Amino acid sequence: MINTIVAAVMAMSTVVVPSAVTPPPGAVTIDVVTVNGSGCSPGTAAVEVSPDHTAFIAIYSNYLAAVGVGARPTDFRKFCQLNLRVNVPQGFAFAIDRVDYRGFAHLERGATGTLRGNYSFQGMPETMYKSHTWQGPLSDNWQATDTVDIELPVIRPCEPRNLNINTELRVNAGTSDPKTTTSFMSMDPTDAFIATVYHFAWRRCP
Image (cartoon, rainbow, N blue to C red; front, side, top):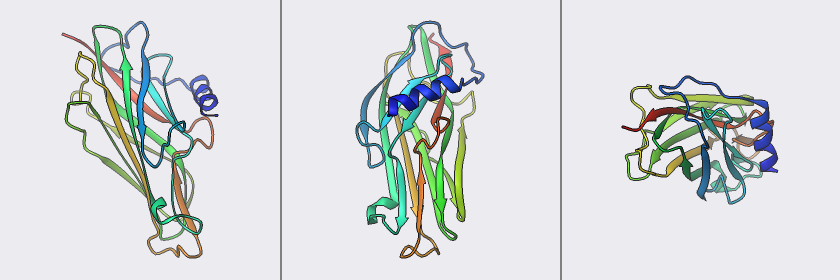
């Protein structure tokens, strides 16, 4: 299922974003080293590089936080940690200068849903978490974008270092009644265009 979704996203959307250096020729691939978290059990997350090497996408098939009827007490918060080995041609390094998040939310009046995310390279400081919150009533697709100044992104060193990606979904019942209603927020692909897109900013190694 998830491989079919990834193929559909890659076939239906080409990501184009300016970068400081033209994307490198040759192969750019990503290996998923580890997957950890209540929002991405093994087999429910996949990663793929765009054909033009300007970005990569992450697809989740069971990433949903919920509160209220039918939800367990721990379901209000879900998180996912991906450890990725990004294989790039020799002589190139990269940063992540923009992230586009997408998903679906059903929030009762008075409830809220929050997305948090950050990334880091192994052995280097983490970037600050950035948060986005939606207020109920809402029952629709949601989208959020995090950007980093092109001159200030955390650059992967020219020696190989894995990329750590952290995301979190949290739903709060607020003034809604969790005994009679359900609110939820997901990064599940309700259609082929819902995927998290991480945009590369390429650099040449000294």
